Structure formats: structure tokens, C-alpha cells
Picture: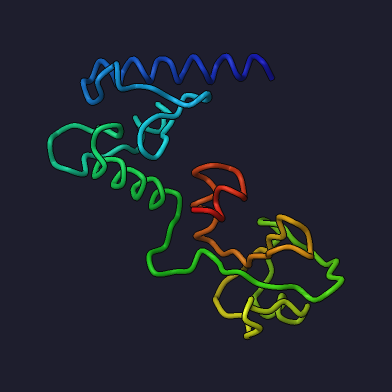
Length: 168
């Protein structure tokens, strides 16, 4: 485990040096999180090298001082991660009292299957959507629940935490 972290951090350090060498971001502006992510939308340096784009047309990919670059790069990231424009990421649902059935982002079922288990939209309405969906119950069956679709996976890939993906 420790060796993998060293390799990862070494790769991120080399990527940071390339970003500086290419002149896209001022070295003094490269202030990152504890994990090394930087800029308005917190890209890791290797992700920056793969997916950052010039959103304001100035020839640089500056995720620190250019909001258009940061947003265009994040949109590019989501598109490359499988985001489908116009499709839902998910929506809030409620489960029947005492629910103890399947749940989890990767435990995908049809919308009809979730409906047959008594899952309903938060307003009590019938479920909608196409494709397989996972049922998130981050606070257990008595807390808020979410039926999530393919677009949720794209958001989840950005930061592998359900709390983050639901929030964005």
C-alpha cells in the first residue's frame, strides 16, 4: 500500500513540474489541498494534464485564475467520464418503513424493480427514468434516499465519495 502511494505521489509531482514547465499556471498559484488537488474545481495534476482545456481562448489551461478554464475542464472531465447531456443523475426517494432490501450505487436494478419494493419519489409519486438505477441510503433506511443513474457515476468518478457526488 505504501509503495503505491509513493508511486502515485511521485507521478503527481512530475505532472506538477510539467504544468509549471508548460507555463499554464504560475508556480505561486499552485496551492493545493492535502491530497494535491488544485484550482477552482480541484484537479489532481495528472488529471489536469489529461483533461484540462482552454475555456477562455487565451492559449493557457489555467484552473486557478480562469473560471472559464476551470468550468470547461470540469465539463470535459464529466463528458469523458460518461456524462449524458439531458439525462438525470438521480433524484430523492423514500423507502417503505422497515426497508431492508438491496441498496448501493453499484447494486443496479430496473426502476420497475425499485418500484415493486415500495420505493417512491420523495413526493410520493411513481418512479421515473430509464436504465438501471442504484439506491443510495447514506443515513440508512430512515434517512434520505436517492435513486441514481449513469450520470451519477460520472459525478462519483470525480471524487469517489457518495456525499460529494450527491452534493454536486
